[in-house]
Length: 527
Image 1: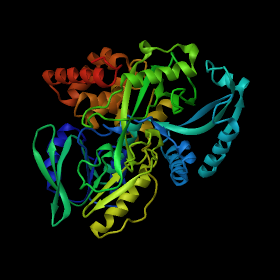
Image 2: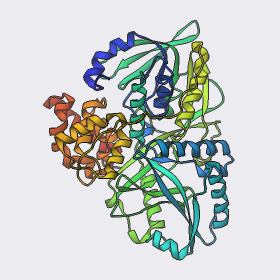
Image 3: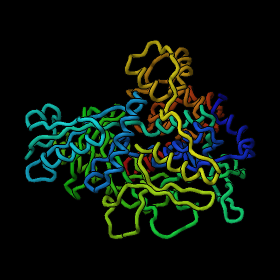
Image 4: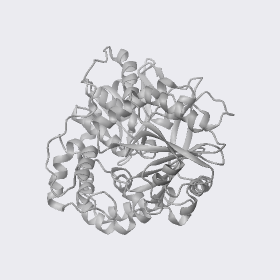
């Protein structure tokens, strides 16, 4: 396959615009990536375009969980839960190193709901839907060993159950890479100006290259809009359900300040909403909130002071001895969930169902809502809706998401490191092996990232801006203090020649990245 970088993009863009496509997917999050993959593996001529960067929206700022949605059982959404737990098991089997199992613990306290018996019944049903039993109850004394520092007053014990965790942005990149291997194409930095219509039917779109300002027309038999919270910006408005953008914000703490080996789920004392504290990428995450996002969608979402205080209060409530304060927070992130609502303004955000919908008009299908875990099933639904517009069917094919990985020696790395790289990079392992031979296996700061990974992202993962590299291709901007400011000279030496940027371009990118980090990924008010 040809190089996938900014130089390739500049050369390929006019030629890709001149082609006739079966389907053009708009939106480079996990839903759009999944649609591109399922179309490509069936031989459809398919292209994905994303207005900012792959996974720029919700798909790099989720809670990172691949889970069945235990709380959806309580809302009667059994089908959603069944599909989710089965897809969770598929991803665990096919993407070790990228999707990893994680045990969750729900502590139970005297007089609080749900108690051990009610929650145990819920877990029995949860496991039955997954086709495997994987939960148990730990009485108070045993739980103290599993969870030192947990609030002890009134503690009865805790229920352990199984789910999984991922790096959501890397999952998007891995799916896009598989789609490209099957003949799909993907471009970032293209903003759709409008859908083009002939005789009342969508027949393509007009897009603007955010890098050059040039506009290109694209033609397709069908357009699939998978733009998440932006779903209503392009489609013809209709009645009934609407997108309700809901913001979920998170804190990231150094692991040594709040070390946890499990994910802990508990009810926040303020509003009885579930909150999580869990290990991720060698750090500890506290999240999430659930509020209406009233700010504009075109800027990076950011945590509010109210949400920041709410999550610190969650730490104080459940881990009082840790005494977590604002000074301990490494970074924050906020994502906007595209929740489908019937327009009931009085309904609390957390009471909204998380099921998806398809909205169709001639030549265009819009996916509204959906979950990270079930992206494959959502993609198949979209293809079935697009197929009649193309006069074709959705053929059955091997339901494995990922190709077999090449056998590659990665010298100098431990087995966990090799597993991690294989899960995150798949077919790119030979390129990583080349860079490991050149750069060695040194890690970046206290993170698990290798300098070779960073070099590969700069060379071959279509990085257009510095925040693409540090917030999505890698998570160095979240995991290192001050957005990795202390490592920027070394990052520049390694990546600037690989990105093809001159000194003026790098300095501008660095200034804009640090301003973005202070505004949207640090503590509230830092800008």
